[in-house]
Image (cartoon, rainbow over all chains, first blue to last red):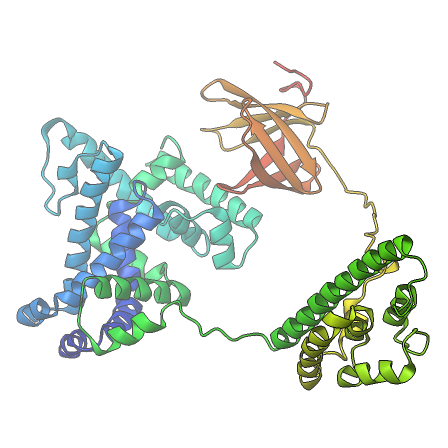
Length: 184
Length: 307
Protein backbone atom coordinates (compact mmCIF):
# COMPACT_ATOMS: atom_id res chain seq x y z
CA UNK A 1 0.00 0.00 0.00
CA UNK A 2 1.48 3.33 -1.04
CA UNK A 3 1.74 6.31 1.28
CA UNK A 4 -0.75 8.18 -0.87
CA UNK A 5 -3.25 5.36 -0.45
CA UNK A 6 -2.66 5.47 3.29
CA UNK A 7 -3.36 9.20 3.29
CA UNK A 8 -6.64 8.60 1.45
CA UNK A 9 -7.60 5.75 3.75
CA UNK A 10 -7.04 7.77 6.89
CA UNK A 11 -9.60 10.26 5.62
CA UNK A 12 -12.06 7.44 4.99
CA UNK A 13 -14.10 5.54 7.56
CA UNK A 14 -12.50 4.77 10.93
CA UNK A 15 -13.30 1.07 10.75
CA UNK A 16 -11.55 0.50 7.44
CA UNK A 17 -8.63 2.63 8.52
CA UNK A 18 -8.22 0.86 11.86
CA UNK A 19 -8.54 -2.60 10.36
CA UNK A 20 -5.76 -1.92 7.87
CA UNK A 21 -3.60 -0.04 10.35
CA UNK A 22 -3.87 -2.80 12.95
CA UNK A 23 -3.26 -5.64 10.49
CA UNK A 24 -0.26 -3.80 8.97
CA UNK A 25 1.33 -2.23 12.02
CA UNK A 26 -0.31 -3.90 15.04
CA UNK A 27 2.66 -6.12 15.85
CA UNK A 28 5.12 -3.25 15.35
CA UNK A 29 3.18 -0.92 17.65
CA UNK A 30 2.85 -3.62 20.30
CA UNK A 31 6.58 -4.37 20.05
CA UNK A 32 7.36 -0.67 20.55
CA UNK A 33 4.90 -0.39 23.45
CA UNK A 34 6.30 -3.47 25.20
CA UNK A 35 9.85 -2.23 24.59
CA UNK A 36 9.11 0.86 26.69
CA UNK A 37 6.48 -0.44 29.09
CA UNK A 38 7.21 -4.15 29.48
CA UNK A 39 7.98 -5.12 33.04
CA UNK A 40 6.48 -1.95 34.55
CA UNK A 41 2.95 -1.81 33.13
CA UNK A 42 0.04 -4.20 33.16
CA UNK A 43 -1.32 -5.78 30.00
CA UNK A 44 -4.37 -3.52 30.24
CA UNK A 45 -2.16 -0.42 30.44
CA UNK A 46 -0.27 -1.55 27.34
CA UNK A 47 -3.51 -2.30 25.44
CA UNK A 48 -4.71 1.17 26.38
CA UNK A 49 -1.48 2.75 25.19
CA UNK A 50 -1.56 0.85 21.87
CA UNK A 51 -5.15 1.87 21.15
CA UNK A 52 -4.25 5.50 21.96
CA UNK A 53 -1.45 5.25 19.43
CA UNK A 54 -3.76 4.08 16.66
CA UNK A 55 -6.35 6.73 17.50
CA UNK A 56 -3.66 9.39 17.27
CA UNK A 57 -2.43 7.99 13.94
CA UNK A 58 -5.98 8.14 12.60
CA UNK A 59 -6.47 11.69 13.80
CA UNK A 60 -3.11 12.82 12.46
CA UNK A 61 -4.00 12.09 8.85
CA UNK A 62 -3.42 15.69 7.81
CA UNK A 63 -0.03 15.74 9.44
CA UNK A 64 0.98 12.58 7.62
CA UNK A 65 -0.05 14.06 4.29
CA UNK A 66 1.88 17.23 4.91
CA UNK A 67 5.01 15.41 5.86
CA UNK A 68 4.50 12.86 3.07
CA UNK A 69 7.00 10.52 4.65
CA UNK A 70 6.95 6.75 5.06
CA UNK A 71 3.87 5.41 6.83
CA UNK A 72 6.01 3.00 8.86
CA UNK A 73 8.23 5.82 10.13
CA UNK A 74 5.14 7.90 10.87
CA UNK A 75 3.58 5.07 12.89
CA UNK A 76 6.83 4.29 14.71
CA UNK A 77 7.37 7.91 15.68
CA UNK A 78 3.91 8.32 17.14
CA UNK A 79 4.15 4.93 18.86
CA UNK A 80 7.48 5.71 20.54
CA UNK A 81 6.35 9.12 21.72
CA UNK A 82 3.06 7.80 23.08
CA UNK A 83 4.82 4.88 24.80
CA UNK A 84 7.20 7.28 26.54
CA UNK A 85 4.24 9.42 27.63
CA UNK A 86 2.56 6.33 29.03
CA UNK A 87 5.75 5.33 30.84
CA UNK A 88 5.95 8.75 32.47
CA UNK A 89 2.32 8.60 33.51
CA UNK A 90 2.65 5.07 34.89
CA UNK A 91 5.92 5.94 36.61
CA UNK A 92 4.07 8.51 38.65
CA UNK A 93 1.29 6.09 39.41
CA UNK A 94 3.46 3.13 40.36
CA UNK A 95 6.47 5.13 41.58
CA UNK A 96 8.81 3.39 39.20
CA UNK A 97 12.35 4.33 40.16
CA UNK A 98 13.80 4.40 36.65
CA UNK A 99 14.86 7.80 35.49
CA UNK A 100 12.37 9.27 33.07
CA UNK A 101 15.18 11.08 31.28
CA UNK A 102 16.62 7.73 30.32
CA UNK A 103 13.53 7.00 28.32
CA UNK A 104 13.85 9.93 25.92
CA UNK A 105 14.72 9.18 22.32
CA UNK A 106 18.01 11.02 22.54
CA UNK A 107 19.69 9.34 25.44
CA UNK A 108 21.78 11.66 27.54
CA UNK A 109 24.56 10.33 29.72
CA UNK A 110 24.12 11.13 33.35
CA UNK A 111 27.58 11.14 34.86
CA UNK A 112 28.10 8.23 37.26
CA UNK A 113 25.68 5.89 35.49
CA UNK A 114 27.40 6.19 32.15
CA UNK A 115 29.72 3.22 32.69
CA UNK A 116 26.93 1.01 34.02
CA UNK A 117 24.71 1.95 31.11
CA UNK A 118 27.44 1.19 28.63
CA UNK A 119 28.03 -2.23 30.20
CA UNK A 120 24.32 -2.95 30.17
CA UNK A 121 24.10 -2.04 26.51
CA UNK A 122 26.93 -4.47 25.68
CA UNK A 123 25.26 -7.19 27.75
CA UNK A 124 21.94 -6.42 26.09
CA UNK A 125 23.47 -6.81 22.63
CA UNK A 126 24.99 -10.17 23.61
CA UNK A 127 21.69 -11.34 25.07
CA UNK A 128 19.75 -10.33 21.97
CA UNK A 129 22.23 -12.12 19.68
CA UNK A 130 21.99 -15.24 21.85
CA UNK A 131 18.20 -15.21 21.85
CA UNK A 132 18.13 -14.92 18.06
CA UNK A 133 20.54 -17.83 17.76
CA UNK A 134 18.42 -20.16 19.90
CA UNK A 135 16.25 -21.21 16.98
CA UNK A 136 12.55 -22.02 16.94
CA UNK A 137 10.62 -22.45 19.11
CA UNK A 138 13.07 -21.62 21.94
CA UNK A 139 13.67 -18.01 20.83
CA UNK A 140 9.92 -17.57 20.43
CA UNK A 141 9.33 -18.89 23.95
CA UNK A 142 11.93 -16.54 25.45
CA UNK A 143 10.52 -13.52 23.59
CA UNK A 144 6.93 -14.34 24.57
CA UNK A 145 7.93 -15.02 28.17
CA UNK A 146 10.35 -12.16 28.81
CA UNK A 147 9.51 -9.52 26.21
CA UNK A 148 5.73 -9.87 26.00
CA UNK A 149 5.43 -11.10 29.61
CA UNK A 150 3.15 -14.00 28.72
CA UNK A 151 2.54 -16.91 31.09
CA UNK A 152 3.67 -20.46 30.38
CA UNK A 153 0.03 -21.47 29.85
CA UNK A 154 -0.56 -18.67 27.32
CA UNK A 155 2.60 -19.55 25.42
CA UNK A 156 1.70 -23.23 25.42
CA UNK A 157 -1.72 -22.44 23.96
CA UNK A 158 -0.28 -20.16 21.30
CA UNK A 159 2.43 -22.63 20.24
CA UNK A 160 0.16 -25.66 20.60
CA UNK A 161 2.50 -27.30 23.11
CA UNK A 162 2.02 -28.63 26.63
CA UNK A 163 2.91 -26.24 29.48
CA UNK A 164 5.45 -28.76 30.77
CA UNK A 165 7.20 -28.82 27.40
CA UNK A 166 7.26 -25.01 27.27
CA UNK A 167 8.64 -24.89 30.81
CA UNK A 168 11.40 -27.35 29.95
CA UNK A 169 12.38 -25.54 26.76
CA UNK A 170 12.38 -22.20 28.58
CA UNK A 171 14.61 -23.61 31.30
CA UNK A 172 17.03 -25.07 28.76
CA UNK A 173 17.08 -21.82 26.77
CA UNK A 174 17.87 -19.83 29.91
CA UNK A 175 20.74 -22.19 30.72
CA UNK A 176 22.08 -21.69 27.22
CA UNK A 177 21.80 -17.90 27.48
CA UNK A 178 23.56 -17.97 30.85
CA UNK A 179 26.40 -20.12 29.62
CA UNK A 180 26.95 -17.94 26.54
CA UNK A 181 26.92 -14.71 28.54
CA UNK A 182 29.24 -16.07 31.22
CA UNK A 183 31.80 -16.97 28.55
CA UNK A 184 31.85 -13.40 27.26
CA UNK B 1 23.67 -12.66 34.77
CA UNK B 2 22.03 -12.80 38.18
CA UNK B 3 18.62 -14.32 37.53
CA UNK B 4 15.77 -14.49 35.13
CA UNK B 5 14.64 -10.93 35.99
CA UNK B 6 17.81 -9.76 34.30
CA UNK B 7 16.64 -11.32 31.06
CA UNK B 8 13.44 -9.33 31.30
CA UNK B 9 15.27 -6.09 32.09
CA UNK B 10 17.84 -6.56 29.35
CA UNK B 11 15.21 -7.54 26.81
CA UNK B 12 13.58 -4.11 27.00
CA UNK B 13 14.57 -0.66 25.81
CA UNK B 14 16.17 -2.33 22.79
CA UNK B 15 17.23 -0.33 19.75
CA UNK B 16 14.80 0.29 16.88
CA UNK B 17 16.30 -2.38 14.67
CA UNK B 18 15.81 -5.07 17.31
CA UNK B 19 12.24 -3.93 17.99
CA UNK B 20 11.38 -4.13 14.28
CA UNK B 21 12.88 -7.60 14.11
CA UNK B 22 10.79 -8.71 17.10
CA UNK B 23 7.65 -7.32 15.42
CA UNK B 24 8.41 -9.25 12.23
CA UNK B 25 9.79 -12.53 13.59
CA UNK B 26 7.71 -12.80 16.75
CA UNK B 27 4.33 -11.14 15.99
CA UNK B 28 2.06 -10.84 18.99
CA UNK B 29 -1.37 -10.29 17.45
CA UNK B 30 -3.65 -13.00 16.13
CA UNK B 31 -6.98 -12.30 14.38
CA UNK B 32 -8.91 -12.18 17.63
CA UNK B 33 -6.46 -9.67 19.15
CA UNK B 34 -6.72 -7.51 16.03
CA UNK B 35 -10.53 -7.41 16.18
CA UNK B 36 -10.40 -6.52 19.87
CA UNK B 37 -7.92 -3.71 19.21
CA UNK B 38 -10.00 -2.31 16.31
CA UNK B 39 -13.09 -2.28 18.55
CA UNK B 40 -11.16 -0.49 21.29
CA UNK B 41 -9.91 2.15 18.83
CA UNK B 42 -13.41 2.68 17.41
CA UNK B 43 -14.82 3.15 20.88
CA UNK B 44 -12.20 5.76 21.69
CA UNK B 45 -12.77 7.52 18.38
CA UNK B 46 -16.52 7.60 18.86
CA UNK B 47 -16.21 8.59 22.49
CA UNK B 48 -14.22 11.65 21.42
CA UNK B 49 -16.95 12.72 18.98
CA UNK B 50 -15.39 11.76 15.66
CA UNK B 51 -17.91 12.20 12.86
CA UNK B 52 -18.38 9.37 10.42
CA UNK B 53 -21.16 7.62 8.58
CA UNK B 54 -20.36 4.36 10.30
CA UNK B 55 -20.48 5.87 13.70
CA UNK B 56 -24.25 5.65 14.08
CA UNK B 57 -24.34 2.05 12.97
CA UNK B 58 -21.61 1.10 15.39
CA UNK B 59 -23.30 2.67 18.35
CA UNK B 60 -26.73 1.28 17.67
CA UNK B 61 -25.52 -2.26 17.05
CA UNK B 62 -23.01 -2.59 19.83
CA UNK B 63 -24.12 -4.99 22.52
CA UNK B 64 -27.79 -5.06 21.55
CA UNK B 65 -29.88 -8.03 20.54
CA UNK B 66 -33.53 -8.19 19.66
CA UNK B 67 -35.47 -10.09 22.27
CA UNK B 68 -37.51 -13.01 20.98
CA UNK B 69 -40.01 -14.59 23.29
CA UNK B 70 -39.54 -18.38 23.46
CA UNK B 71 -42.12 -20.44 21.56
CA UNK B 72 -43.15 -22.35 24.64
CA UNK B 73 -43.84 -19.16 26.54
CA UNK B 74 -47.47 -18.84 25.37
CA UNK B 75 -48.25 -22.46 26.23
CA UNK B 76 -46.56 -22.26 29.60
CA UNK B 77 -48.39 -19.04 30.44
CA UNK B 78 -51.74 -20.59 29.47
CA UNK B 79 -51.00 -23.73 31.44
CA UNK B 80 -49.99 -21.68 34.45
CA UNK B 81 -53.26 -19.72 34.21
CA UNK B 82 -55.29 -22.93 34.10
CA UNK B 83 -53.45 -24.37 37.07
CA UNK B 84 -54.01 -21.19 39.06
CA UNK B 85 -57.68 -21.15 38.14
CA UNK B 86 -58.06 -24.82 39.07
CA UNK B 87 -56.31 -24.34 42.38
CA UNK B 88 -58.43 -21.29 43.19
CA UNK B 89 -61.66 -23.00 42.25
CA UNK B 90 -60.80 -26.15 44.13
CA UNK B 91 -59.97 -24.06 47.14
CA UNK B 92 -63.34 -22.33 46.99
CA UNK B 93 -65.02 -25.70 46.60
CA UNK B 94 -63.22 -27.12 49.58
CA UNK B 95 -64.06 -24.08 51.66
CA UNK B 96 -67.72 -24.29 50.74
CA UNK B 97 -67.75 -27.96 51.55
CA UNK B 98 -66.33 -27.27 54.97
CA UNK B 99 -68.80 -24.50 55.61
CA UNK B 100 -71.72 -26.60 54.47
CA UNK B 101 -70.56 -29.56 56.50
CA UNK B 102 -70.49 -27.25 59.49
CA UNK B 103 -74.01 -26.13 58.61
CA UNK B 104 -75.11 -29.76 58.23
CA UNK B 105 -73.81 -30.61 61.63
CA UNK B 106 -75.87 -27.76 63.11
CA UNK B 107 -78.95 -28.36 60.96
CA UNK B 108 -79.08 -32.07 60.22
CA UNK B 109 -81.31 -33.28 57.40
CA UNK B 110 -82.13 -29.87 55.99
CA UNK B 111 -84.28 -30.53 52.93
CA UNK B 112 -83.52 -29.20 49.44
CA UNK B 113 -79.76 -28.66 49.90
CA UNK B 114 -77.30 -30.59 47.74
CA UNK B 115 -75.18 -33.24 49.37
CA UNK B 116 -71.76 -31.67 49.48
CA UNK B 117 -69.88 -34.93 49.83
CA UNK B 118 -71.32 -36.40 46.67
CA UNK B 119 -70.53 -33.19 44.81
CA UNK B 120 -66.98 -33.53 45.88
CA UNK B 121 -66.88 -36.93 44.25
CA UNK B 122 -67.96 -35.33 41.01
CA UNK B 123 -65.00 -33.03 41.26
CA UNK B 124 -62.50 -35.82 41.46
CA UNK B 125 -63.92 -38.39 39.11
CA UNK B 126 -65.25 -36.11 36.44
CA UNK B 127 -68.53 -37.96 36.62
CA UNK B 128 -71.80 -36.17 37.25
CA UNK B 129 -74.06 -39.17 37.39
CA UNK B 130 -73.38 -39.80 41.07
CA UNK B 131 -74.32 -36.30 42.26
CA UNK B 132 -77.50 -35.41 43.99
CA UNK B 133 -78.45 -33.04 41.22
CA UNK B 134 -80.15 -34.64 38.29
CA UNK B 135 -78.04 -35.73 35.35
CA UNK B 136 -79.82 -33.30 33.11
CA UNK B 137 -79.04 -30.39 35.36
CA UNK B 138 -75.39 -31.38 35.68
CA UNK B 139 -74.97 -31.83 31.96
CA UNK B 140 -76.48 -28.48 31.28
CA UNK B 141 -74.03 -26.86 33.59
CA UNK B 142 -71.09 -28.75 32.24
CA UNK B 143 -71.63 -28.37 28.50
CA UNK B 144 -70.05 -24.95 28.06
CA UNK B 145 -66.89 -26.24 29.70
CA UNK B 146 -66.55 -29.56 28.04
CA UNK B 147 -62.82 -30.07 28.36
CA UNK B 148 -61.93 -29.20 31.92
CA UNK B 149 -63.44 -31.31 34.62
CA UNK B 150 -61.94 -29.28 37.41
CA UNK B 151 -63.74 -26.17 36.36
CA UNK B 152 -67.12 -27.82 36.44
CA UNK B 153 -66.84 -28.37 40.13
CA UNK B 154 -67.56 -24.75 40.70
CA UNK B 155 -70.95 -25.19 39.20
CA UNK B 156 -71.89 -28.11 41.31
CA UNK B 157 -70.42 -27.05 44.57
CA UNK B 158 -71.33 -23.40 44.77
CA UNK B 159 -74.41 -22.19 46.43
CA UNK B 160 -77.31 -21.28 44.18
CA UNK B 161 -76.71 -17.54 44.26
CA UNK B 162 -73.03 -17.72 43.51
CA UNK B 163 -73.27 -20.43 40.89
CA UNK B 164 -74.39 -18.23 38.04
CA UNK B 165 -71.62 -15.74 38.26
CA UNK B 166 -68.94 -18.35 38.74
CA UNK B 167 -70.23 -20.47 35.92
CA UNK B 168 -70.01 -17.56 33.54
CA UNK B 169 -66.45 -16.79 34.49
CA UNK B 170 -65.27 -20.34 34.30
CA UNK B 171 -66.85 -20.96 30.94
CA UNK B 172 -65.12 -17.98 29.43
CA UNK B 173 -61.78 -19.06 30.76
CA UNK B 174 -62.13 -22.55 29.48
CA UNK B 175 -63.12 -21.48 26.02
CA UNK B 176 -59.96 -19.43 25.76
CA UNK B 177 -57.89 -22.36 26.83
CA UNK B 178 -59.50 -24.71 24.35
CA UNK B 179 -58.90 -22.27 21.56
CA UNK B 180 -55.22 -22.24 22.30
CA UNK B 181 -55.15 -26.05 22.65
CA UNK B 182 -53.35 -25.90 25.96
CA UNK B 183 -55.63 -28.09 27.98
CA UNK B 184 -54.45 -31.18 26.18
CA UNK B 185 -50.97 -30.78 27.59
CA UNK B 186 -51.99 -30.26 31.15
CA UNK B 187 -52.80 -33.64 32.66
CA UNK B 188 -49.50 -35.41 32.16
CA UNK B 189 -47.16 -32.51 32.83
CA UNK B 190 -48.99 -30.62 35.52
CA UNK B 191 -49.76 -33.42 37.91
CA UNK B 192 -47.03 -34.50 40.25
CA UNK B 193 -47.55 -37.39 42.60
CA UNK B 194 -45.52 -38.51 45.53
CA UNK B 195 -44.06 -41.29 43.41
CA UNK B 196 -42.69 -38.78 40.95
CA UNK B 197 -40.61 -36.92 43.49
CA UNK B 198 -37.01 -37.00 42.37
CA UNK B 199 -34.71 -38.87 44.65
CA UNK B 200 -31.07 -38.31 43.68
CA UNK B 201 -28.91 -41.37 43.59
CA UNK B 202 -25.90 -41.07 45.81
CA UNK B 203 -22.89 -42.70 44.31
CA UNK B 204 -19.39 -42.61 45.60
CA UNK B 205 -16.41 -42.64 43.29
CA UNK B 206 -12.95 -43.40 44.48
CA UNK B 207 -10.62 -40.44 43.78
CA UNK B 208 -6.99 -41.15 43.14
CA UNK B 209 -5.19 -38.98 45.65
CA UNK B 210 -1.44 -38.97 45.46
CA UNK B 211 0.32 -36.60 47.79
CA UNK B 212 3.85 -35.56 46.84
CA UNK B 213 5.23 -36.52 50.24
CA UNK B 214 8.93 -35.88 50.51
CA UNK B 215 11.35 -33.11 49.57
CA UNK B 216 11.44 -31.45 46.19
CA UNK B 217 13.40 -28.68 44.53
CA UNK B 218 12.33 -26.21 41.87
CA UNK B 219 13.83 -23.25 40.04
CA UNK B 220 17.40 -22.97 38.83
CA UNK B 221 20.76 -22.62 40.54
CA UNK B 222 20.27 -18.90 41.15
CA UNK B 223 16.79 -18.99 42.64
CA UNK B 224 16.22 -22.43 43.99
CA UNK B 225 13.22 -23.33 46.14
CA UNK B 226 12.85 -26.39 48.32
CA UNK B 227 9.48 -27.93 49.00
CA UNK B 228 8.93 -30.26 51.97
CA UNK B 229 5.61 -32.13 51.87
CA UNK B 230 5.34 -33.80 55.28
CA UNK B 231 4.20 -37.37 55.72
CA UNK B 232 0.87 -36.37 57.33
CA UNK B 233 -0.34 -35.47 53.84
CA UNK B 234 -1.61 -32.02 54.92
CA UNK B 235 1.30 -29.82 55.89
CA UNK B 236 4.51 -28.68 54.36
CA UNK B 237 7.17 -26.03 54.25
CA UNK B 238 8.62 -24.14 51.34
CA UNK B 239 12.05 -22.52 51.49
CA UNK B 240 13.61 -19.85 49.29
CA UNK B 241 17.13 -21.27 49.44
CA UNK B 242 19.03 -18.20 48.29
CA UNK B 243 17.23 -15.91 50.76
CA UNK B 244 17.03 -18.43 53.59
CA UNK B 245 13.33 -17.76 54.12
CA UNK B 246 10.93 -20.56 54.97
CA UNK B 247 7.13 -20.47 54.77
CA UNK B 248 4.84 -23.15 56.22
CA UNK B 249 1.75 -24.20 54.34
CA UNK B 250 -1.22 -26.54 54.51
CA UNK B 251 -2.47 -28.27 51.43
CA UNK B 252 -5.38 -30.38 50.30
CA UNK B 253 -5.34 -32.74 47.37
CA UNK B 254 -8.32 -34.02 45.44
CA UNK B 255 -7.53 -35.88 42.26
CA UNK B 256 -5.08 -33.68 40.39
CA UNK B 257 -6.22 -30.51 42.16
CA UNK B 258 -4.12 -29.16 45.01
CA UNK B 259 -5.01 -26.17 47.18
CA UNK B 260 -2.34 -24.41 49.23
CA UNK B 261 -2.82 -22.20 52.29
CA UNK B 262 0.46 -20.34 52.57
CA UNK B 263 1.96 -19.00 55.79
CA UNK B 264 -1.14 -19.39 57.91
CA UNK B 265 -3.10 -17.26 55.47
CA UNK B 266 -6.70 -18.34 55.07
CA UNK B 267 -6.61 -17.44 51.38
CA UNK B 268 -6.52 -20.38 49.02
CA UNK B 269 -3.93 -20.79 46.30
CA UNK B 270 -5.36 -23.29 43.85
CA UNK B 271 -3.19 -25.30 41.48
CA UNK B 272 -3.12 -28.48 39.47
CA UNK B 273 -0.52 -31.19 39.92
CA UNK B 274 0.79 -33.39 37.14
CA UNK B 275 3.20 -36.25 37.77
CA UNK B 276 5.81 -36.53 35.05
CA UNK B 277 7.64 -39.43 36.67
CA UNK B 278 7.87 -40.73 40.24
CA UNK B 279 10.68 -38.23 40.80
CA UNK B 280 9.34 -35.19 38.97
CA UNK B 281 6.07 -33.31 38.81
CA UNK B 282 4.70 -30.01 37.57
CA UNK B 283 2.50 -27.68 39.60
CA UNK B 284 0.32 -25.49 37.38
CA UNK B 285 -0.45 -22.38 39.44
CA UNK B 286 -3.75 -20.86 38.51
CA UNK B 287 -2.31 -17.35 38.48
CA UNK B 288 1.38 -17.60 37.75
CA UNK B 289 2.05 -20.50 35.39
CA UNK B 290 3.78 -23.82 35.78
CA UNK B 291 6.59 -24.87 38.09
CA UNK B 292 8.53 -28.10 37.78
CA UNK B 293 9.56 -29.89 40.98
CA UNK B 294 12.25 -32.55 41.13
CA UNK B 295 12.72 -35.03 43.96
CA UNK B 296 15.62 -33.93 46.18
CA UNK B 297 18.41 -36.26 47.18
CA UNK B 298 17.43 -38.19 50.32
CA UNK B 299 20.62 -37.24 52.18
CA UNK B 300 20.12 -33.53 51.42
CA UNK B 301 16.62 -33.00 52.81
CA UNK B 302 14.71 -34.66 55.59
CA UNK B 303 11.14 -35.35 54.52
CA UNK B 304 9.74 -35.34 58.04
CA UNK B 305 11.56 -32.33 59.38
CA UNK B 306 8.84 -29.98 60.51
CA UNK B 307 11.09 -27.10 61.32
